[in-house]
Picture: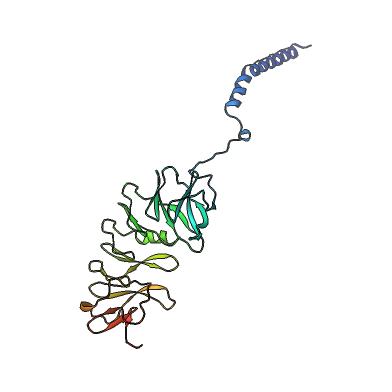
Length: 289
């Protein structure tokens, strides 16, 4: 055998020996590395999130339910809103108020509620069922319920009426300064720039009246006035309530009984007067017609 062949053979054997030694030395490290950073295909971990009431399911209204008022209820560890099907017989369905803690939940009036973390609003919907939502931006320390429709905190004014419309109303009230917001009656409110009316017809919505907030006053459930006009809570041609201006009124002498209610039929006869005319249901009244 030539010397060159012997040399090549010796070098090959040495390389093989060095490779085996390197594998023996590095293998434990490779195994350890594989254990620390396992391939993604080996992972069975699933990311999960938890929230209060996450296991809550809708259920029937029954004797095991603690009814807080016409809108809110607690059953076991869960907070519910109520969809009454027969109010007198207390038959209905409960829907979950997700995020609410039964341990700290308490009602604020009839529409609003709070727990240790959030403010909640109940919204009516006679067609799709009632709902409840968290008022994300509400300031809990300054939040105050004014009546069944309105609430406010140091930042804004809130309205609750018809589900789906309440968010729009919040937007409509976004320019209202809560420092000057004032409820005048169950139907009317004002701030330093606008006058608002709550109109109810299969749910309640809020609208603005083109009136002077500085001189606006409530006469009764039907009539209001400012320095220029008399307004009436009437109806349009489809029978849906709306605010109309009473034409031809003598402002300085206009009177109407403060106890008159919009939804009561007082029969024949006028419901308002001025020096020159009589009025009924937003229009001039002519006896016998």
